[in-house]
Length: 73
Image (cartoon, rainbow, N blue to C red; front, side, top):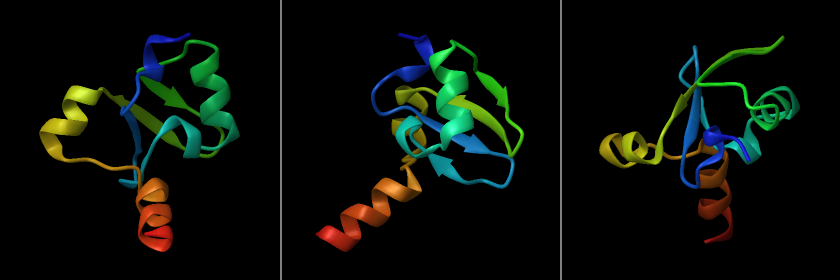
């Protein structure tokens, strides 16, 4: 398992989109699985890894996980 797969970590693209590894799309998930990071350039986007400590410090949340919680909650 890659060091860039920590639970509660997120990836942020150049446009500011925040996602967890599960919602990052196939290119990002594949690069993470291959151990790439903390900066990943995919054919569709430019991503930067943020550790669980940074996530907590800046109160970051995966946008897709948040949408699911709001919809299901």
